[in-house]
Length: 39
Image (cartoon, rainbow, N blue to C red):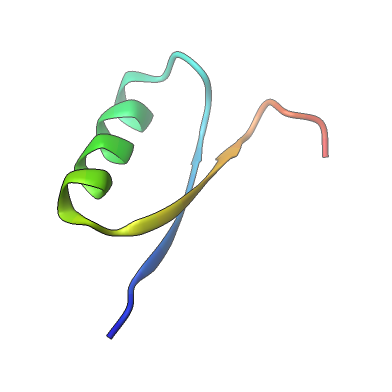
């Protein structure tokens, strides 16, 4: 089973950074979507 996650976050957000770090350490693939970026 493969898990893929989308993280919606912002640059400088500590919680977002911690979430991405935890996902990397767990070997879970994820996309990071910057909520402040233009669509």
